[in-house]
Figure 1 (cartoon, helix red, strand yellow):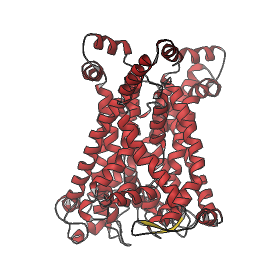
Figure 2: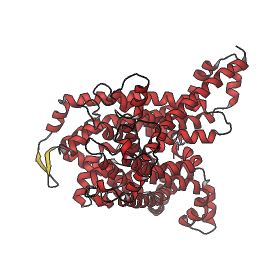
Figure 3: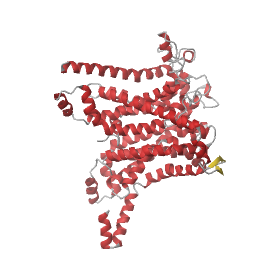
Figure 4: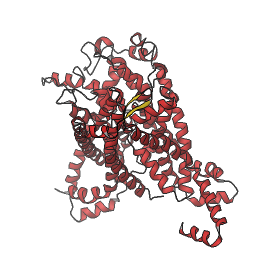
Amino acid sequence: MTRKQRMRVVRFWKIVAVTFMLILVCVPLYWVVLTSLKPDTETMGGGLGKLYTNNLTFENYKKVFVYNPQWVGYLGNNLWPAIMNSFFISGIVTLIAVIVGTFAAYGLTKFPTRFNSTVSSFVLFAYVFPAFILVGPLSMLLSKVGIIDSRLGVIVAHLLIAVPFTTWMMRSYFVTIPTSLVEAGMIDGTNKIGALFRIVLPLTAPGMITAAVFAFTRSWADLLYSLIIISTTSKMTLPLAITMMKVGDVYQWGTLMTAALVAAAPPVIIYAVLQKYVVGGMTAGAVKS
Amino acid sequence: MELSGLHAFLFGRNVMARMMKKEMSNLLFVLPVVAIVALILIFPLFYGGYLSFFKSISRGNARDFVGFKNYVDTLNNEGFYRSLIRTSIYTASAVFTKIVLGMIFALSLNKRFRGIGILRGIAIIPWSIPPFVVALIWFGILDWAGPVNSVLQSMNLGTIDWFSKSTALTTIIMINIWKGWPFFFMSFVSGLQAIPDELYEAAEIDGAGIWRSFWQITLPSLRPVLLTTMLLSTIWTFGEFETVYLTTAGGPGEATRTLPIQIFETAFSKFQLPQAITQSIVILPIFLLAIFWVVRLMKKSEGES
C-alpha cells in the first residue's frame, strides 16, 4: 500500500468510529426526548419502544411543571419544590466551595509552608474518596448533630463533593500565575488578600468559572447523599424526588423521562456552552503535562 | 526548612517565633478546606471505626459492645465475598471497555477539522448527564417494551430480558460504559495534543506503519495519563451506586448486588448500621492503596507543591 492508500483506509475507519459514536450517544437521547413528548396512552399502551409518534404533546411537561394528579399526596403537585431545593442547595454549596477553594489554592501555590504538600495530598485524598464508604457513619453523625432530614445536612455532605475538587482545580490555575507577580503587588503596598483580588483573580477568572460549574453540577447530580439524609417530601432534592417517582411495577414513563430530562438539562447545557474550559478543567491534575 | 532552622539556631528564638507566626498566617488560607475534610470525611471515618464494635444502633446511640464480632461475621460472610468478586468483575470489564472506546474515539477525533468542536461536544454529553438520569434513561430503553426490544422484534429476533438473572450484570456494565467512556476520551484528546507531530513523521520515514506508531509512540506517550485516569475510574466505578440502585437495585436475586449496594442495603434497608460500616472498613485498605497511588501520580504530574 502506498502512503496515500493507507491514509484513505485510516480515514475510512475513523469515519466509521465517529458514526458509531454519534449513534451511541444520540439515539438514546433522541428516544428520551421523544418519550417525553408522547402521550401516556402511547407510552403505557405498548408504544414505549416506537421511535416515532404522530401524537406529539406537552402534557408530560405540564404534569412535571404545573400539576400531576398522580403525585398529589406523596410528591406534591409538581416538581418545582424539588427543583428549587436542588438549586438552593447546589447554589450555596457552589458559593462556599469556590470561596474556600480559592483561598486554599492561593495559599497552597503562593505561600509555602512546610505543610503545603501534606495539605495537597489531604485535599486530593478527599476528592478521590468514594462516597459509599462514608454514608453509614456520616448519616449517623448528621442525626447526632441534629441536621439529618434537613437541607443543611445535604449542604454539609455536598461540601465534601465540591470543596476538595474546587481547591485542586483552582490550584492548577493558580500555579500558572508567577509568584513574582504577587510579590511585586505586595511590595507596592497591598496585602495578601489585596494581591489575590487585584492581581491573581482577574487572571484566573476562567478557572473560577470552571470550578463553580463543577461544584454546582457535582452537587446537582448527587443522589446518594440526599437519599440517606432527606426523608420529608418538602425537602427533597430533584434527584431524590425523581427516584421516588419510580415506585411500583407500572412506571409513568412519560413523566419519568420528562423529569429525567429536566434534571439533565442544567449540566448538559452548562457543559456544552463552556466546553472549552471544561475539558481542560476536568483533566486538571490528571492530565496536565 | 534547613536554612530557617539554622537561622533560628544562630539568631535565637525571636526569629523562629516570627517565622512560625508567618507560617501560621499562611496556613490560615488552607484552614477552611482542611477543617471541612477533617470534619466531614476523616472524623466520620474514625467514628465509623468506633461504631463497628457495637451490635446495633438504637435511638442514635450505639448499643452492646461486641468487640470484633462484626469483623468475624463479615469475613465469614460468603455473600460479602460474592459481592466483592462481582464488583471486581463489573469494575474490570467496565474500565477496560471504557479505555478502549475512549481511545478509539479520541484517535478518530484527534486531527483538527471543521465541526470538530461540535463532535467533541456531543461526545461529552453522556458524561455530563447526572448518573441517576443515565440509569433511568437506560432502564427505559432496555425495558421489555422499550426501543431496543422493539427493534429486535421488528427484525424477528425476539425480545431479550435485559434485567434477568443471567443478563443484568452485563447490562449494568454496559450502562456504566455508556456513561463513563468520555472521561477517557477527554483525557486522551488532551494527552494526544501534547505528542509532537515530528515523532510520527520520523517514524514514518523509518517505515513504521500505523500499528507500530500506535504501540511505539502514541501509547507510551499517553502512559502517565492512562495510568492516572485508569486508577481514578477504577476507584469510582467500584464505588458506583446510582446506576445499579435505579435499575436493578442489586437484583434479581443478588445478580447485580455490588458492594456499594450491599452496604447501602445492610445499613438502610436492614438497619444494621454497624455491620454495614464494618463491611466498608474491611474493604477500605484496598481503596486506600489505590487512592494513595493515584494521589502520588496526580501530584507528580502537577509538578508537586
